[in-house]
Structures are given as structure tokens and as C-alpha cells.
Length: 511
View 1 (cartoon, rainbow, N blue to C red):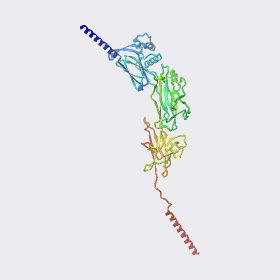
View 2: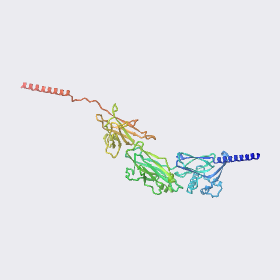
View 3: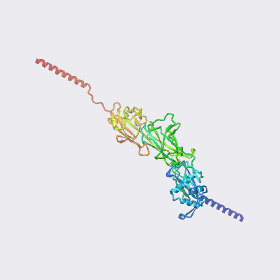
């Protein structure tokens, strides 16, 4: 019995020792590393890879803490090559060679990190740990269960290789990435537009670093809103009915850059939606790896504003990139806003707000033209709804009695920001025509909400964005054609006749 108790005690002690060992082992691997994206960029679609270059053991506390580094055999040959030491060097010699490169963030330290990454990608060196493709929008990613060590942190598919180095131990658990994800920015040459205007769009991008990739996808997608149509040039040359492409111009921003490969001159239109296009720059990007990594380029193309344009008119370009066609990432769309504005008129009878039909107007861009009746803005439309149309011959627009569901009874859509002069060319029957032009001023929004635009009449802002135009009428004016006037005329004629008769009699008597 005593023997059994001793055996049980020994087994219990062994179990406790094993448990303590497991706990200690777990503690050894309990390190975390939080990776923060550069500038709060979205990590969605990215992959973060860790390469543990050295194992680390530590002793002591605070300022007396000591570190011992052991080279990771997986990367020993690559490290020896980059550090210019023999592969058989001791662990401390490898660590000393890294230390000799410089202090934190030194140029040579960054170059070492970038060179190792390029070599690892080219030689297909295995990673120590990976995030896999991140599928959710986030600006930080946390690795857990890491061994203490000296790690290189690399984010795939950046504009250029800018890897980070960090020692992960009980006190260090954060690294801030330097890598920037590929991105594009779309801009328009106009901030507000008239219907019929041609807008020049410019997409800015830069040649990403594709080191280590056998293939690389770099495709710009653009989808116009219904108020825009692709055209081939600045004069608005329309696409043919059977067009499958639209003209584009691809060029480096800096003068003197020798471009590699042949830049595309057209983008492919979607088969079913001619307002969607895609420009595949994958081959051109790869052709410019040798001399032009990181250099900025532009893509230029054109769209014409059509009659469906509205205040919230905008469209977006989006970049698709990645090292595999089946695993590409789409960037957040870059939007370009080109709002166009309506002129809404409430034509009423003065004093009782009765809506009046039959009032005709013309609109001018200058006071001189308004006074002389020259160069009126051309429109098309009917039933109180008109749009700007430079190809039209119509220069007048007419109010109606009512437009269902609207607080105005005349609209002209498609005006850019600016000052206009509204001239009434004909008043409704029985009403007096305006004697002077009405000054209309449209001002675009000064904040991110394009709907915060304003419109004023003769210097006064209209809060409801409707221009009120009143016509007056009066009572019947005094006339001069009644019976009383005829009677007076008859009496006057009789008096004149009587005087004439009297004059004749007097002459006879004298004779």
C-alpha cells in the first residue's frame, strides 16, 4: 500500500512537472505582434508575411537585459550573402554584421530588409508565418503564438518593397509598416459642368514593385454614371455604335523617363455597358520594372455630359492588382465629381401666388448679351422641362400651369456654376412683362456634400433653390371712346354750324 502511494506521488509529481513544462513552453510562444498599416491604409486584400531571421533568448531586466541571437538555418545562406560574410560564421558574427549596418531606420538597415525580401521572393524562400489574404477591412493585424525572435515583416503587392524589421519579445509587440499599397487617384479638369461639355479625366498611378512575381495584374476599371458618355477626344468625338474600345493616353509624369514596353492606346469597353471600361496595364507595368519602379504615370481619357446629368454627378475609377489573376485586390474607388445644376422657376401672379403658364424666357451668360438679346443659351424640351443643348436652335423656354409633384412650374437643367441673366421675352396674356434681366448666381458646395450648393436671385439666396418670378396685372384703364364723347362732338359740331350760319347772315345784311 505504501509502495502504491509512493508510485502515485511520483506520477503526480511527474504530471505537475509536465504541466509546468507545457505552461513554460506556452509562455515561450505566447508573444504577439501587432502590425499597423502605413498611414491607416486598409489592409483588406493584402497578405502579411513574417520571416524569422534569428531566434532570440533574453536574460536580465530593464537596462541590464541581454539578448542572444541564433541564426535561422532556413535563411542562413541568404543572410550570409547579403551581409557579405561566410555561411559558416558564428551566430554572434551574423548578429554583429546586422548591428554594424546602423541604428534604427538607418538607410543601410532598410536596404538590408528590402534586399532580403527581394531575394526571398525571387528564390521562393518559405515564410515563418503568414496572415493569408486579409478578407476584412482593417488597419491593424495581430499575429499570436510567436516565438521570440528577430522578424522581417513584408506586405505583398506594395508600390515598392519597404519591409520592416522588429525584435519580438516579452516587451516589443508592435511594428508600423512602411509599405504603401498600390493606389490610383482620379481627377477631372472641371469642377462643375454644363450639359454638352467634354470632361478630361486623368488617373494618376505609379509603377509597383513586382519583384518575385511570375505574373502581376494591374488593371484600371472605370464606370461612368448615366449622365456621362465616353468619347474619344477633347472635341467629343462619339464612339461608334459597334465600338469595343475607347481612346486613352498613358504617359509618365516626369519628362525624360524612358518607358519600357509599349503603352496601351485604348481601353476595353464592357460588352453590355458602354459606360464601363477596363485598361489592362499588367504587361506595361512589368516592362517598366528595371528602371521605373515607383515612378508616377497618368492615364487620360474623355467623357461628354449628357442630358441625364444631375447635381450629384460623379464617377469612379478603381484599381485591381495582385500577383495572381484569381487572387487580385480591388482598391477603394477614387471618385471625381462633376456636378451640373438646375434652374427651377416658380412663375406666379403677383399677390395671390397663382401659377402662370405661357411665360417665356431666355437665359444669358453676360449682362451685355442679355440687354442686346445675343448669344442666348440653347435648350431642348417641353412641358416646363428643358435641358441645355448646344446643338439646338431653341433659345426660349416656357412655363406651364403645373408640374406634378413639384413646387416650380419651369425647369432648365444642365448649368455649370456661375452667373446668369434671365430675361422674360413674353409675359402670359393679360400680364406685364419684366422690364429688366433677373441676375441668377449658382454657387457650388464648399464642403464634401455636393448638395450644399446655392442659388440666388438679384443677390438674395433662395433657401428652397427655387427662383420666384411674379407678373403683375391691373384694372381696366380709363377710356376715351364712350357715348359721352360722341355727344360732346355732336354738340360742338352744331355750335360751329350755328356760328357759321350767323356769320353768313351778317354778311348779307351788310351787303
